[in-house]
Amino acid sequence: MDETKLAQLQAWLAQSKRVVFFGGAGVSTESGIPDFRGVDGLYSQRYSDPPETIISHSYYLRKPEVFFDFYRTRMLYPNAKPNIAHVKLAQWEREGKLLAVVTQNIDGLHQMAGSRAVYELHGSVHRNTCQRCGARYDLAQFLTLGDLPTCPKCGGRVKPDVVLYEEPLDAAVISGAVDAIRRADLLIVAGTSLTVYPAAAFLDEYPGNRLVLINKTPTPRDDIASLTLHEALGDVFARL
Image (tube, rainbow, N blue to C red; front, side, top):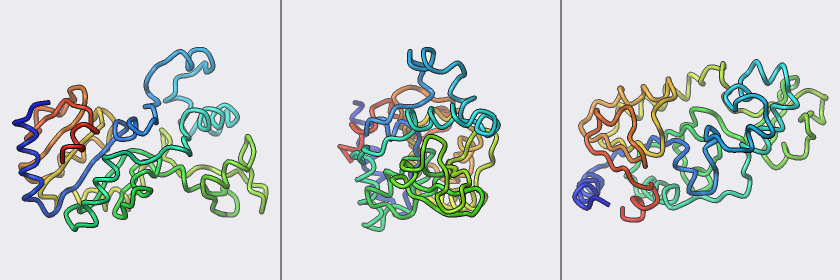
């Protein structure tokens, strides 16, 4: 690890009072949740369509059986636990140092670690809503509702509150996330390839000069960063 860069991040963190953390799938991979975009043999063996197609709104309507099979086997990890990044961020919030977490993840691990100010851009697997009567179900309840999740109150289809491809992001969540980023005195962006829009464009809302990118591999936005660390997120947060 580049000790000079790490020391710079440590110094900025010590000086900051309004940290905002923007995270992607790489934050949760260290909790054992794989990035579903990764191509492995299972997809080609079991699914005839690419993951991005299966978790689209039109596919959900057209082939709900395949959608829910994929959703359960590839996107639900009910036994996953927060890792050191989740825990440290929650600690910073309790200490009054962290303003908000903006996440592209749907696993709820930030809240499980104790974070309260969390903007979930793509929704959460822990919220599920009947499309007919509006009844709400948590993840444990959802898992009892059958292969095609059916509301026991009215017989309607229960849909996870996750943002599928072809669906818009929640306007209130976007507003809150952008407002936090605009107020940040340190923006840490981690575990994301910064290729999914409009989320990747949120970096352009940051007015400061302390933009830190932490990702194992280079991103298309490395050139705008004040500091880049191509390291495992857990290794970096263990030193903060």
